[in-house]
Amino acid sequence: MLRSKMKYKQAGVTLIELMFVLVILGVLLGTDASNNYGRWSSAEFDAAIADAGAATDPADIRAAYDRAEQIVQRDVPVVPVTYGTGWALSRGELLGADQNGLGSIRMAGLAWDD
Image 1: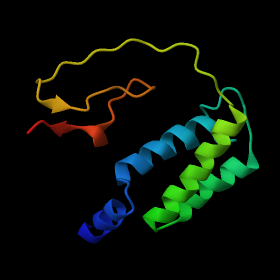
Image 2: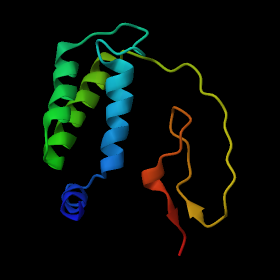
Image 3: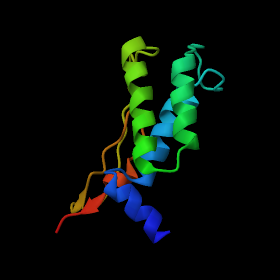
């Protein structure tokens, strides 16, 4: 487990970040995804997501997700028109407790102020 964590850290990415990207990209925009309400479909995008899921090297996973994100940026399959408001309480020393576009707190960004 420690060796696996070190590989991800050396690739400049955390496992949680990779999982988050998979959820956002794959679950919301995959061709057969149940939450793909716009029914956007891209074989190129689906292949990039599949490559990320099959890869074991963190750098390869990140490269596949980067390809998927570039496709989404190019094709613009969704356009957010509104965001909900949200709030959270924490101690003042907690840094990085910002919500992402889905209203969840990005746990990988949390840290205590020294």
